[in-house]
Image 1: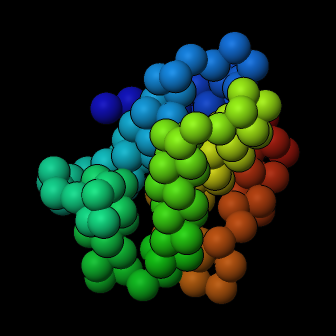
Image 2: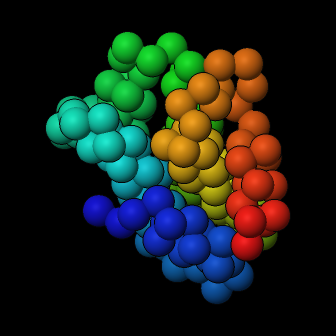
Amino acid sequence: MRTIAAIEEWVEGWSPEGASAAAPGELLAAAEDVLENWLQAHNRTPTRKTKEGFRLLALHSQAARGDPSFNACRETCREAAYRYNLAATELAPAEWRVNIATMRRVVQHLVYFVGGKLRNAQLGEFCCASRPIRADAVLEG
């Protein structure tokens, strides 16, 4: 499992241009790694189960138990699964790249949210935006 920082660096440097057919699986695995980080940080063993055919959705369900504010990223996880399914269909190359680029942004949002929530547990109680935390990091850096 990669760290949140490693996933963030990878997803920020990732480009849909020239992406292989493995790209949707790589992005989905990155999203799963993000939720595994959350669960392990809270001394919970990440599930191997699936929900609606996706481990990502089962991991989200597990992560949200006991922390209602974690539901702020439920639709982000569902969108990642949706984009993964779209990539498995017969899309024209241009459509496929747009779909994968969107999936990348969705995974990036998940990284920012969970990474921010690991730094500030209240993140997501009123808004899922991690911008204040990220802005602080820029000011500190």
